[in-house]
Amino acid sequence: MTPSDVKATLSFSDGSPSMELPIYKGTIGPDVIDIRKLYGQVGKFTYDPGFLSTASCNSTITYIDGDKGELLYRGYPIEQLATQCDFLETCYLLLNGELPSADQKSEFSHLVTHHTMVNEQMQFFLRGFRRDAHPMAIMTGLVGALSAFYHDSTDIHNPEHRAISAIRLIAKMPTLVSMAYKYTVGQPYIYPKNDLSYAGNFMRMMFATPCEEYVPNEVLVRAMDRIFILHADHEQNASTSTVRLCGSSGTNPFAAIAAGVACLWGPAHGGANEAALNMLEDMQKAGGVEKIGEFVKQVKDKNSGIKLMGFGHRVYKNYDPRAKLMRETCHEVLDALGLHDDPIFKLAMSLEKIALEDEYFVARKLYPNVDFYSGIVQRAIGIPVSLFTAIFALARTVGWIAQLNEMIGDPEYKIGRPRQLFTGATQRQVVPIAKRG
Image (cartoon, rainbow, N blue to C red; front, side):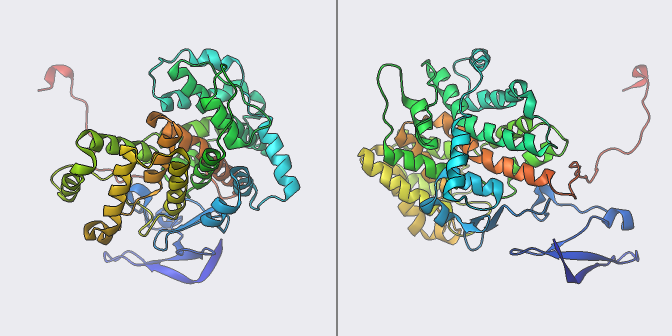
């Protein structure tokens, strides 16, 4: 961090002495005011519910400019990575800070590919779940359980342990997600094949059966790879902050990532694409395209309680750059599968048209976001809605690991310990039970 020559002066109207606070400049983005000595000097904390105005760390990994609709991984625009690189190149970039050379990519891909199998005991672990369990309930258990199988890489302070844990997690997540899926539909697990790409391998483990050979459709493989790239990291969001906070206690990487999976499950975070698809299916049951006008009226009515899922974004105050890329992929997949006449997709495209043209949505910048399109793409591919968030977790794993490793390597890192504004009862005395009214 580079301290600025300019300092912030904090003054108090109650006569308390003012204090100077250092200001740090990032390479891009807003300056930050360093308040670490605030409590020690004036006995006060800052109050920032949701940490919306608080920088919890310094990071070199991902940068978002919500006003411009810009997303950079290690300085590279998401548009370039999604069109010129594959997911494993993106993983290498996020973990190491630079894009790989051809040799580095080959070596990294080989390493990930040869760690895709999971311990056979995982199958017995799966059998403890009900068949109708939500895949994210299964994933939180499976990812946490990895630490029970890999005692040789659970020291978060050992760089070699962190490196092998990163490879293991990236490699095994597709296997675990596909196992969770196969378990819930009662089909046999499909083992990974080392001659397939990362996304191709995942598609085969998801959709192959022992009855016949499965050949992945390259259009769908590319679509899945792009979904992985677009969801690989997104700065200090709720699940990433959870992984950092969990990891700050010194817990093992598998436990920290399991905490991220649990956080991602929430409908306001990773469950947004699931919620968007469920909304479309509910609209279809209620009359589909013919009734879309009534639905839009309800969305505009604040008292209706009807929300438009898959539109707008907490960070992007302009168009989500990932949505543009996912929209392209969406149409490629629909073309390849001949699904443009599917009623759900017709409904989705009609809703997209209204959102991009209707003054109510345009004025509020309620553009379709990445969740809207990725849900449509995954449904077209044949992925059940309940599995959407697990696939998001699979993609985000590399970002979580990169952020966790960065935090552990930061000399200023400490165990996370947010403060509070206490508004409860002051000290009081226990009254004997016989005398309590």
